[in-house]
Length: 114
Ligand SMILES: [Zn+2]
Figure 1 (cartoon, helix red, strand yellow):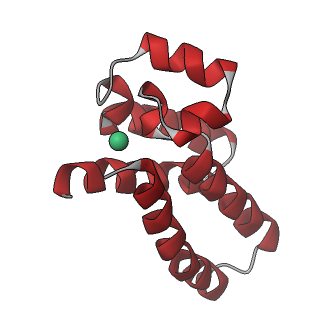
Figure 2: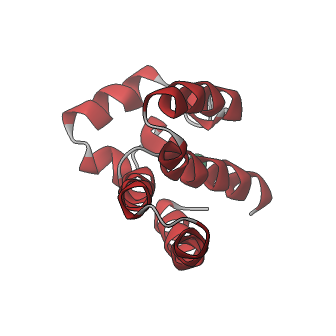
């Protein structure tokens, strides 16, 4: 799946997640952090920073450096890495940090399935 379709898929799922959050959680600030992190995880910090992707271009020099450090579909496409990042993020931010993890897991899964 190419980067544009990854973004389309994540933007398709986003309203359903938002509806669920609005239904289950009444903490608007936490939901807002989740939404912002979801968008960052969709457009900027993605698994495809390891190739010449749209997210790599958006991060400019930092994206170029990450692209040079990691081979495509290597470490950045490893769910264990994102789980470790998730543990740290959960400890620091709490459940809204899932907003940046979900797009990565969906990305990895869609890379495998589609
Ligand atoms: Zn990918």
